[in-house]
Length: 117
Image (cartoon, helix red, strand yellow):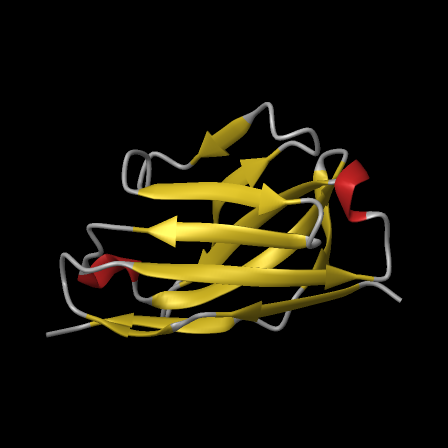
């Protein structure tokens, strides 16, 4: 079955960096686009970034553009999110999701990112 397992979350200081990883299994990873989304405390789900299966297209929410970089390693079935210049508004649970058509059809359980001094 499809499994997505996020890791790499934790505590970061404002202005700091973190790199999230998502290990994928149970499907042909290289043939699917993938995304990251997040949910901040008391707020709704926010799409953060997406990447096409062939790594030729990446897309970002305006809130993270220029600070976050999504990437993938198809040989390792792994998705990444490099986050830099973090601020307190980036505090959220971050989810990895498979992007199929217009929907995110499978989700991981999430990893907590807290930005605080």
